[in-house]
Image (cartoon, rainbow over all chains, first blue to last red; front, side):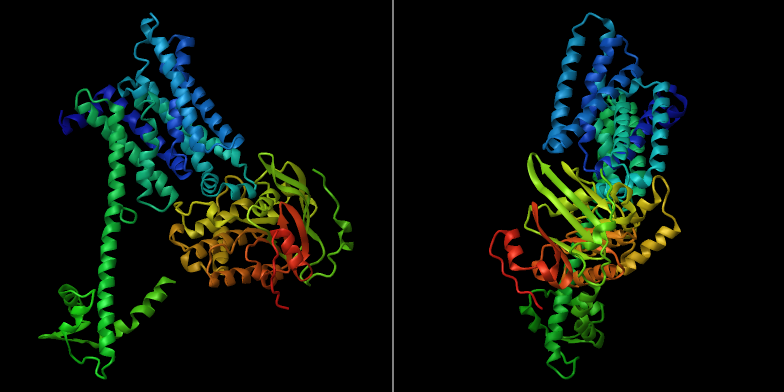
Length: 375
Length: 265
C-alpha cells in the first residue's frame, strides 16, 4: 500500500480511521501527562502502573467471565491505582527509595498478573483466548466506543490541567514551598497521579502493559529538548505523542503483520533521537558545533593576544614582524593567521605581519571585555 | 493545638534588645520534638523569637537546623510540640510567613524563567485556580529589581549562576510581602558579592520591622550580620542577643570541641 492510497483509506475505511484516531488521542494524552511524570523524576512510575494493571485485567475477567474491554479496563484501573498508592505508601512510611518501591510493586504485580493469565489460559472456557493481547497491545481491536472513552478522558484531563495549571506547575518545581503557601499538595499530587493512571490504563489495549511507559516518557523527553517553557513543553509532548500514534498506525497498517503498539513506540523513539541530536539549544549536534566554534575563537584570541604582546614593545603598533616569530606559539596555524587577516586585525606583507589599529585595540580589550560579558 | 495570649511577654529577658525590636514575640515554639526512625533530630525545643530580629541558627551538621525551620513551617510533622506565629497556630498565619528553601532542594533544569519562579511567590495570596495578573507581575518585577536580577527576568533558570539562583529564591520570598522570613542557608555556595547583596537585603528587611531567621554556617560572620542567635544541636543550647551569648562557652557546648572565636567589638 502506498502513501496516497493509505491516506485515502484513513478517511474512508472505518476501522483504520478508528484506530488512527484512537492512537492519536492516546499519544496526545500520554504525552501531556508524561511531561509531568518526567519533570517530577517519576519516569518509572508509568512502567510500574502499567505492570500493576495486569492482575486487575485478569481478575476482572475471572469475575465477569466477559472480555468486554470496558470491564477489563475498570479492573486495570483499580489495580493500577492500588499499585500506585502502595508505591506512595512505601516511600512515605518506610525509608526505601522510590526506585526500590517502583521496582518492587512492578515485579510483584506483574508476576501475580502473569500467574493469573496462565491460570485463565488453562481453563476450558473458549472466551479466554486473546486476553494476553494486553501484554503487547492490539490496536486493531479498538472500536468507536473505546475512542470515545479516550476522547472524554483526554478532554477531562485538559480541563483539569488548565484549571489547576498554576498549582501543577509550582508543585512540580518546589513541593515543600508549595505547601508553605497553604496549598494542599497531597490533593494536587493525587490529581496528577490519578490522571496518569487513567491515561496508562486507557493505552493498555492499544500499546500493552510492557511498552506503555514509553508512551509516557518518549514524547515528553523529546519535547523537553525544544523548549524552556512548561506550557510549550506540554503542548509539544502532546503533539509528538499524537504524531507517533498516527505515523505508527500508518506504518503498521501499510506493512502486513507489524504490530501497532511497538511501531508507535519506535516512532516515538525516533522523535526522541531526532530531538536529542538536532535541538538547537540542547541537542548534541549544535552543542558540538558550538564547542568547536568556541575553541577556534579562543585559539584566534590567543594568537591575537600573543601578537599584541609582541607589538606592544614597539612605539609604532603597526611595526612589521616576521611570521617565523609565531611558529613557536601553540595556537598559531596558517589558517588562524588568514582568519585574522580576513577580520582586518592583521596585515600581511611577504614574510612579515603587522597589527592594524583595530587589531591592536581588539587585542588590548580582549580580556577586559570578556570578563564584563560574563557578569 | 493551644492558642496562648501573648499579652504578658513584655516582662521577660528581651527588654534590652536592638531598637528594631518591639518586644513582641513573633514565633514561639513549645516542646518541639522531631524524630526520624526513633532517633530524635530535635529534642524538646522551646524557642521564642522576638519580632524584628535578624537571627542566625547555628549548629554542626545534623544538628537539626533545617528540620527546625521545616517543622515550624509544617513541612515536617513533629512528634510533639506546638508552634505559634504571633500567638496563633501557623496554619492561620501562613500569609505572614515566607520561606527560602535550600537552593539545592529543587531541580534548576525545570523549564521556566526567573520571573516565573519569582511570580510563584504570589500564588499563596492568589489562592486556588486564580492566575497571576498584571499586579502580581509588577510586584515580581520589583522584587527582581531589589535583588539586582531584573536584567535576567527572561533567563531560563538553569542558565543562572548559583548566586543568581539564590537571589531568585530570595526575590520569590520578598514578593510574598511577609512579616517573618525563614531562610535555609541563603549564603551556601554564593560568592562574596552576592553574600553582601543578600545580607544588605536582610538588614533592610529588619529595618522595616520584619523578623528574619537564617540557618547559617559561617560562625565568623555571625556578629557582623546578625543581632540575635540560636545555638542548636538536637537540643536548644542557647538563644538571645549576639552580644550577650555569642561566646566560646556556648560554641563549645554546641560544637563539642573547644571553640575559640575572636569577636570584633
